[in-house]
Length: 333
Ligand SMILES: NC(=O)c1ccc[n+]([C@@H]2O[C@H](COP(=O)([O-])OP(=O)(O)OC[C@H]3O[C@@H](n4cnc5c(N)ncnc54)[C@H](OP(=O)(O)O)[C@@H]3O)[C@@H](O)[C@H]2O)c1
Image (cartoon, rainbow, N blue to C red; front, side, top):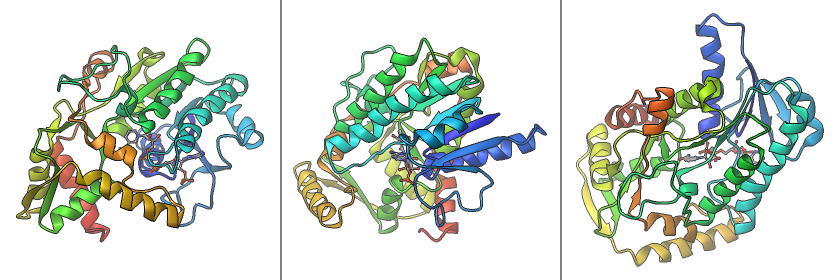
């Protein structure tokens, strides 16, 4: 297998790359060749000292991408932004890059067996009433991020007849190396469990190790060509239960505090102001707050189970335990 991975310096991409390299070794197969598109020096990133072949540039670096595309059998496209400063930046990084990259693959990757695009539940949108959203429903993204990921999906659909494409829509991904759900672990360490408002809020989640296993399954499975899949733990979690599960994993006593919904936009305003000063995307912006105010980010993993036999190995409790242990070992908590 000769795989080009975009977004390999990131949370999910870096673990995927390691699994690609380990998997071939464990199964006694010929060593996997893994090409990683990187747009900056890799020292200090998860890719440092990992035996991959670096392809320098971004998704518009045609001159460096074309020779690699002529060699690869698989492309896993994770590069994208989950936080950006402007709407234009979201659409550029998630939509236009994907459209351009697909065009390059169609023209210059004659041996391509699979192109996997990592989209997001945000492209499908939240559930209006708590019912698990399925792949056959029309997308209803409500955030700029969601619409920009949907733009990436629409670009994939344009090439579906010509390229062997599969789209994966993960919900919240957590696990070692993640810095988002990590913020919640930090709160619990301080003895707090903050939740937005008093309304029930549910969320689907998947541990990064399970998602990586799902990406690899999709990349080899002929049935997956032309399909879109949610990949998730079967049961969504209520924020309250989730907080308790994190507290249990960390063996912490916590106080649950409901933050009034009206406070969230104010926090976003402060965070966006700080981001303007530092010229970096805000951790909490108005778009993220709009997403957080939805009650049900829940999806069904049934299609992936039935068509591909994909079943996550880790329960939420085991996944949170594994994540907590990693944060502790690395001194993050
Ligand atoms: N994490 C989640 O909970 C979650 C959930 C659903 C979907 N997803 C999707 O999964 C993918 C990976 O997420 P992640 O959490 O691993 O993100 P991450 O840690 O922020 O990593 C993003 C990666 O994309 C690269 N990248 C961004 N823009 C690029 C561009 N224009 N050209 C080349 N590379 C670019 C980054 O490179 P640099 O190192 O150079 O910045 C980095 O390697 C994203 O597409 C995201 O939308 C994530």
